Length: 428
Image 1: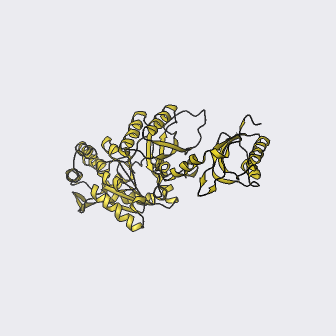
Image 2: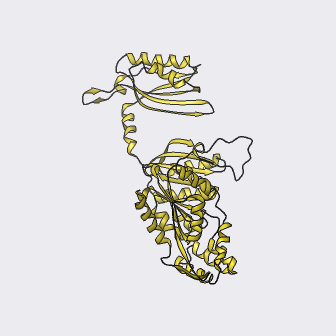
Image 3: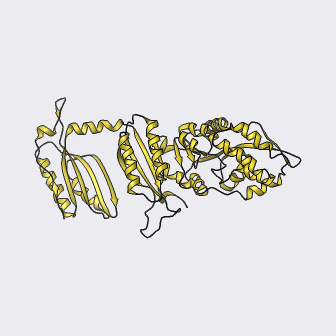
């Protein structure tokens, strides 16, 4: 039954606005709560549908079979609007609902309508299990950067209460925000700091038409699609693993120019038998979530590409395995069955990756803002910057700080959450 219904007779002089000689009819906000069931909204509107009302806004959410529905109604100007409120009250009571009916000041409503042009953002919080501390820290940062929450949605599935927290558990909450932050860079830095301190992933994107129409996804290969650096694996077979690994680490941290470090590493592989390539390819460890991500991207019509400073031989191996559309990497030079320690020009470095992303966007007929790039190293930064959505995946600190988005706590398939997909949409 109704516990409490708030509605009141109001002075039309305070709730109506004279606009070019026309009177504006009164507006009321209804908040309805109670036990959800099939047909509930139909039953509510069975009464409203027979009334002379205008629906200005409506929204609903359900948590654990409890419905919360809100609607903003404009009622006819005149004494009959009080009778309409009484009918709404009676219908709610008959449906065993609680309802709060309150008048809305016309000027407040006009101000609210005027906020439709405010910037919109989508913030995605990805963690093992959402905690009160995480929500508190994230929402505090929102306030500090003049962002107001418009909607909150859970993208991950419901967790059983008896399921222990483990590395397999994923929880994701999406916040729709409105506002105009004074300093975008400072805002991103705030969320990055929180993510690092709480060991969670936080991505904040401008919510525009491009975010909802991404079409091309470009991946780095080594330490992104595969959980290894191929050149290190080849070096291990050549007996120069330690030397090459040290140079690789320096390059990934941005301490060495990619091209120079690449030439130095390649020279150490001179004389390695090409038969080793097949063996290394067969043993490549696939990155957590890579197979699931690509399976879903293909199912939902995305084009995919590998843009790698690694080697074409291994990119083609992954292309065959996963059905990737495009592969651009470095071509090993092989003479008499042995690696020469060189690659065939041009070398795919950071600048070339960005160029290739633009070329592929033109080839696929999409805007650069409709592209996604995923990588982990300093040589991926030009590509991440060029893409509409650039994601530093399990990257070094320098790369995480420079990229707009960063993910470190879960597998590649979690990128689907950044695209707005829910667990129920994801093919496993």
